[in-house]
Image 1 (cartoon, rainbow, N blue to C red):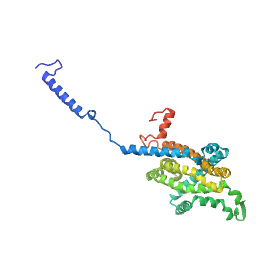
Image 2 (tube, rainbow, N blue to C red):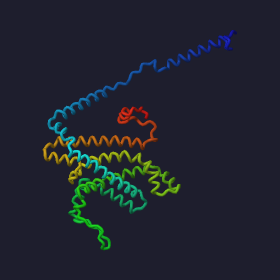
Image 3 (cartoon, rainbow, N blue to C red):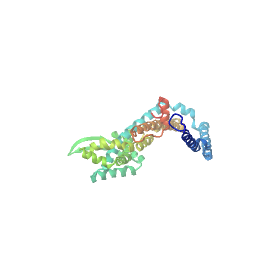
Image 4 (cartoon, rainbow, N blue to C red):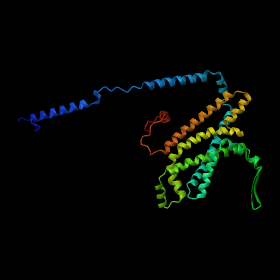
Length: 326
């Protein structure tokens, strides 16, 4: 039989070519591009989108066209010096109350997990009391503490160490700080405790085997891993504290709402001044939300391979010129 010079006879080569053609034909039949793919229809999705768009347009029209909102007055007082002083007071009280609450909450969380029954019971009582009484009641109580104790005095064995008038100490700022910070500490303690419990107990056993003390274990092993669980709810509580400082207006602390109240009590422009306060609260909470987003991503590194892109991450990448995977 003749060959083609490659050592393969012509009949064998023909059989090989026929088998190859049949194989390619079968692959062409299985090629999904040969079939026309019709996407699934979602008519109600479009209907709901149109309805929601119309509602949003209607709401914007109502806000713009209603004279009672007084947008000219809003523009006049938005950057007023007294309003800006209230914004500073709100941020100042938020940072102080969160710092106090976070310090107390971390201590209470560790006490709750302590094997010492006295420490655990005291921590449980603290949580029960401050979570069970309204923040407004606590603020008013601290502000009127002088009706119970006219003087705050500390003496040991007849030696007077400290003695001062309660009205001098319990100012508006001190009352607001204690009322907001102690309440925040009760809720923060449960967040920290949940984060600590999320770490596997084997980490504690391994730390003990390496000779680390309980304090070193919490500082170097547990807390860095617990931060992933702690940060999201703690960020929400931080934003809630920013808005919760408005309750300090009841004790005449110079935060944002109190300053707005002082102005509209003088000018009788109640609704426009409330709009001014609301716009500032929206701006501040938006900034805190963006900061919370980046901090959470920072501590979540290594736990997710491809985290889903968010709108804030997309906008940040566009502004900085980074790719979506950066």
